[in-house]
Length: 144
View 1 (tube, helix red, strand yellow):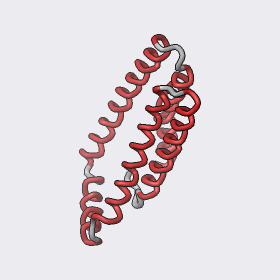
View 2 (view 1 turned 120 degrees about the vertical axis):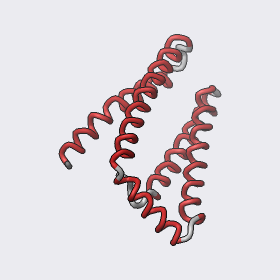
View 3 (view 1 turned 45 degrees about the horizontal axis):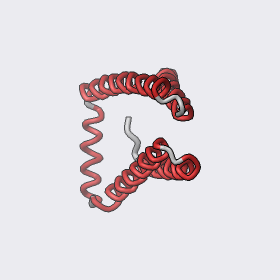
View 4 (view 1 turned 60 degrees about the vertical axis):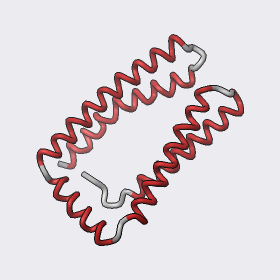
């Protein structure tokens, strides 16, 4: 299921990137830590990718190219095999990211114990990654 207007997702990506960049800047001024630099780097990356995606979406394609891409996307979206492949790859990606986040929490929590705010944020992300499939499955079960 794709959204007809992904511009709002690009704007959300830009806003999240700016917020993370500003948070990293504030943390850098207060604590001068590597985590603050990482937050700034991730925030800048999110902001730039959102801006570039928005620019490409708005400027790079003519209306005829956009119509052709929408038509091709509708065909590909309805293809049963592609739907199953996307579902399976998304589930496997979720499992791998969950394992990677667990390893990250263990490494940062035990090897670098002075990064507790980072550990707490990672644990919250891990909890969110575990809850979202259950929540969306319940929502989609009601709709279908």
